[in-house]
Every structure is written in C-alpha cells, then in structure tokens.
Image (cartoon, rainbow, N blue to C red; front, side, top):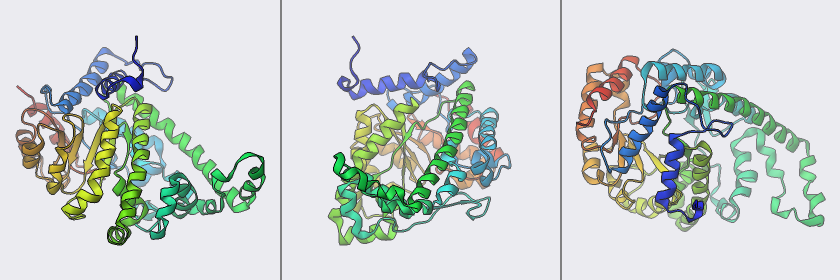
Length: 450
C-alpha cells in the first residue's frame, strides 16, 4: 500500500522527489521520452552525480560541473542582453547551442533572464534592465528604495497578501499604482458588502491597471512556452538543471525587496522586534513557494540567493539574531518536505560557517563566491555539499592555464573525498569561450575520483 505524502518521512519525500527528477515528465504530465538511450543515461548520470555529492555518503565518479550565468551563455555568441530580454527565440536557441558546444552537467535556466516585454508593460520600478535605463549590454541593476515604509510593518504582519496587492505592487510597478484604490478582499462578504466593494473596479485607472496585468499575463504565456520548449530540448541533450524552485531568506526579503539597505539598517535599531516578527511572518510563505515551485517542476532543488547576510553587512551578533534563525527555519521547512535548498552565497561568508553545522547532514547545497574553501571543507566537509569559488574575474580575464590551475586547486582542496561541485562563484553576465572550455574540460578530465 502506498504511503500518503503527509505520512512520509522527510527522507522518503526526498527520495520520491529524486526519483521524479531522474524521470522527468513533460507538459502533458507523461514521462518524458528521451530521443536515445544515450541521452537518458547522460541525464540520469548527471542527476545521480549530484545526489552522490549532496548526500556525502559515497564519492561520485567525478566532480559535477555547473557553469553559472545570467547573460554569460549568450554573451559568448555575441548576443546582447537586450536581445535576450526581448527576443525569446534568440535567447533560448542560444542556450541550446551553449549546451551542445560546452556540454556542462547542468544548465542554469534562461528563464532567470525574464521578459523585458513584461517589465515594460508593468513599468517595473525595482530594477533597471538592458535598454531600459542602462546600456543594451548591461546586466540587471537593482534600484533600491523604501517600497515598504517604516510605518508599514503592522500592515505587513496583519495580511501580507493584502499588503503586497494594495501597497507594495502599486509602489513597485508604475502601471499598477491604481491598485492602491482596491477594497481589502476580506471586506467582501455575503450580500451586504459585495456591491460596494466592486466600486473600485469601475474606476478607469483601476481598469487600466487590470488591463495591463492581462497584457502582461498574455506575454508571460508566450514566454513560458519558450521556457518549456527549452527544458525539453535540454533534457533531450542529456542535461538536467540544478534549479527547480526558488525562495528567499526572510531577512533579504525585507532588506532587498521591501525596506532596502538603508531602511532595514535603521529598523534594526529603531524597531528590531518588528523586523523579527515580519521575518517570522514571511518564513512560512517562502517555504510554501519553494515547495510549490519544486513540486511543479518535478525537481527538488530550491534556489535561495543570499545577499545581506554576507560578511560586512551584519555583525556576528546581528547575524545570529536577525538573519540566521529565520533562514534556518526556511531551510528546515524545505528539507521537511523533501526539497534540497541550494544556497547561493554571494560575497564572503567566512564568519558565518559555524552556523551551517546546525543543519542536518547531507541535505543542503551551498555555492560560495569569495569564501575560503579550505576553511569550508575543513569545517563543513562532513556536513554540507559545497560548490563554486572559481573566481568569475579569473574566468573572464585570465588565461586558460590560469583557469585550469585554479580548478585543480579547488578540486584538490574542496573536492577531496567528494561533496564538491565545480562552479564559478557568481552569476556572470559575460563569458570567455576559451576559459569556459578550460573550466569544463579540465574538470571533466582531472576531477575523477580514483
């Protein structure tokens, strides 16, 4: 008799998710048919290679390889970031070409680039993108601001969805500013409240905002067809992805998306308890988001970019009080549902390593940027799967010999005994063809466990 999902242990849930990842399903819900036994074997070998590295239970046959980029994969073919944002066919076909030419174990989905057309329709304020406020050759630039005011904490705590709909979205999207006029949805009850609560939907600016959302939705449907088409092509070539879902550290949600760096720094001193309550309120929402996306993708990996927990942003005392507790709760919540948190540690996390030992062994993957990998391996090599640390600057401007030398150092240091994934430390917007080949080819040859 099959065990109900809610009655399964976290380990059993994870094994079920691993099985689904090894045998992916297409958009029709049926098991994906690989074009050849060789493609299926390559795909499943890459999945198994990562699982072996993650679990720390046995050494994979070699070091897994994961080149991480945003516009890097298209830059090596001369495709501009603006073209990636507006020409879906060019974006996704170029990523297919990258997989054929470079043959990494895993791909970083071009869906992370997003749609410039959707951003235009909604008049997104939180970022500048190629050809919109910055050069056609530039990657994204965050426009920090107080999209949530210091006095907004009670509203966020009371009803996060209502706060997002009627406060944050009108501030973050120019086209959606009229949504601030909507009546809170819980006010719509029985016959008494229905008619009056519909009045805002009759206001022309609100109707225009809703029309913009419909336009954005139609454009997003066009975009997602290309995303799905690319995934199917990547699988057919034997490449899985290491990103199934996504979530965000609760502190970063406040410090990036809502309050901004200046705002959150003031809040830590002026209203620290509100900061903690807000993070605790948000944590279950992002567990649900990560689990939901991973389930929909049939891939257990939940990508979590870490920003303002890096060395220098917070003292150790502040990190212990404000950053780590809700991040740990997020990770444990994902692990309990059989997901694998994939932490992207931008910057240096040298002073944060001791906290990671609190996590269950072999359940998380941490990709490091500038952290001392010797220290990471020594302190955490028996606890977490680690990756990254190949300098993006070296990968872009160094020589192939320098890249091979650094890959050797990382494999000898961080890859000893397994538990390491070769990757660059940041999501790159530019690429050097020779050096990418040096990274991938050398690791494939040298990173073999004997």
